[in-house]
Length: 215
Image (cartoon, rainbow, N blue to C red; front, side):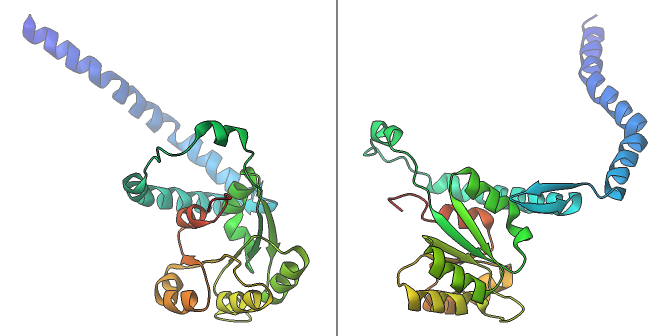
């Protein structure tokens, strides 16, 4: 009887996985057809004012999730709670709003990061070229500037922009968000030119931006 009881228990523990597997097998083709139909109809969504295809949105989400997962261990190790922080004071103070200028010839690639900043209450202005970025900087005097490294008019556009902005106003935090190769191989040159930080990680970028008064 004891053996029979153990067998019944084992079979019952397998019941849901088996049922789930059968359902997946049964509905695999209809689900796949629905996905292909959505792709065929070219459904789009709007993120931070940019219209993204399902493929573009999915790719950006995939990159963000992978990036967050790769940084979790590092964040957990560095996370320290300061005992000197006054929680009452923080609760009474409204979070500051920062003006951010983001210069990139293909701003759609940054849609989710821009949306994150906007949800935090910050104002993000977009420029597509170095010249447009300099003009908008003079007009609005943003608190923070973010740029990609390479644009059609200049392979070192991020560095060129940094030097131009610092000639107008020194001390402005400027961040370069670029591909992995540039982040690794052009880091020293970028920092020497006055760039605050250069990274290919969206998570690192958001964590390094001086978005609070104490940053």
